[in-house]
Image 1 (cartoon, rainbow, N blue to C red):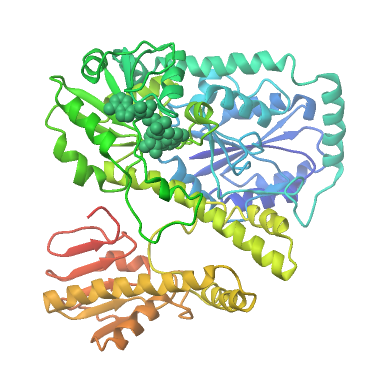
Image 2: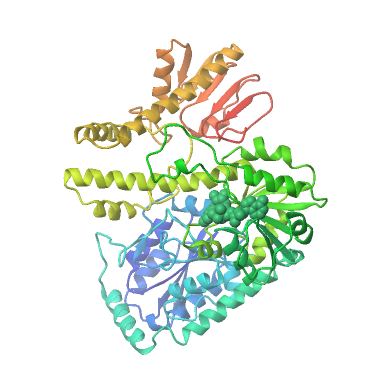
Length: 619
Ligand SMILES: NC(=O)c1ccc[n+]([C@@H]2O[C@H](COP(=O)([O-])OP(=O)(O)OC[C@H]3O[C@@H](n4cnc5c(N)ncnc54)[C@H](O)[C@@H]3O)[C@@H](O)[C@H]2O)c1
């Protein structure tokens, strides 16, 4: 799966640590090591690696840091796998699940067809990419890895220029040089490289002639991407229509025109623009191959947020959107209607679908764009969200527009949800930040240090970890910390007791699952069986376990049920099973016919004869 390219000098022990941490054999990986023929510790290297089938050592004439591109280009040529990771002998992976995170992330790429550069180091800062992982296609297109001595920087600049850079959070190797490791390595190799680095930076300022080389390499990748079938197919989109030329629609329509598309706009207001304008929605629909709709879905000004909000809560106003949809539906033409306007989840199902008729292919394509950076955000999206079924045309459009496929495809209702959850996720971060600020103010802490420290927690906090849906938070640490902080929030008179709120949410979520379980037991008149007692699969600890909380809620309601961890009977009875801990073996249990399985983790496969209720898994 991955070839690791890794030059090493005078550091056999450190290389051993680095390679052990990667667990080459376990993960179908090979390491290609460049050693200098004058290395003082060649024998030690041989002793460590000669008999390791996953390590291929190349002993070559020394070239040194100033020509490190020679080493890495050579190792790349020898690499066998489809992903190539540039690593160093003074680094190691300190999170054993790094490979699963990587594998999950790359599952949607085709490394032999798509040029891709993955940044595992920058953790959100796209410029830093100390340990790039590149796809095989990247090397095939360029014919080399780097043309500059600072190979990681070169690869990343090409990737940014060609729009093929992806940030993968959740893996950040410990680098004993830069990673703030408690055990920095300042040996002879370090000193030599630092000396060479200063010298070479003085001699060959990297902006020139490397700048042109980077541009040329980026151009090669863009031109390859533009030649792919997905891009070529999108040529059939000649005219792009835009209904609603407001704060979002107008700059986006103009940006699309800038990229060489014919764009036709329409607005009910008089708009100052160089875009050609249609006479009516009908006129625009007739002349366009795809039609974007960016009309407003406003809220009442009393919900603007500049004054304290009324107690009532209300949906957006969809009247502008509905009016447009009715007009588009009345035109006698099959139309790809791409709606960008913000809608709450289930708007499509309840308000829009009934209006469509059979000529509109409705696609929901919300933008993740901030006021002030509309065009930049559109041109450099984190991903392009598309909700719909017949998505081929819009996918072709975006593939052509961005030079590669950046789409994330789902159903319309889920896309409606992702849009508003994205924005409110940001709000949640702000709420947390401000709460830390208030605590800091009242207790004499430094909130900026809190921010800086937590921002370095790229394993558990600034990463996809814990963002999954399942059972409530548990264990011997999290709930108790929330309880104690909720006490402290009361003590200092915090303006909002956030921690109490998390505890309430934890209990209410479990209560909701208990009610769902009880409903199935009552409705089907079969026994209830909870599987799982520990708070998470890797442990047998039951302290703070949401599985035990569920059981206790049921006991409080005088519900009869059986409760097992691994001591369940060999022959399982017909029942309503609630999987309360995500133990792997539960997924393979043979549930008798007519049983019901409530699965908050969505890992039990649907099968004939039983009903699996996967919580949140698109019922
Ligand atoms: N502005 C942003 O940065 C941004 C970002 C993400 C999402 N959105 C969403 O995009 C949608 C549009 O936002 P906006 O800020 O551009 O709103 P806006 O009010 O600035 O623009 C809407 C435009 O649609 C026009 N319009 C209304 N009815 C029309 C009709 N029947 N035919 C033609 N034109 C019509 C209006 O005259 C107006 O010019 C909203 O749902 C918003 O939530 C906006």
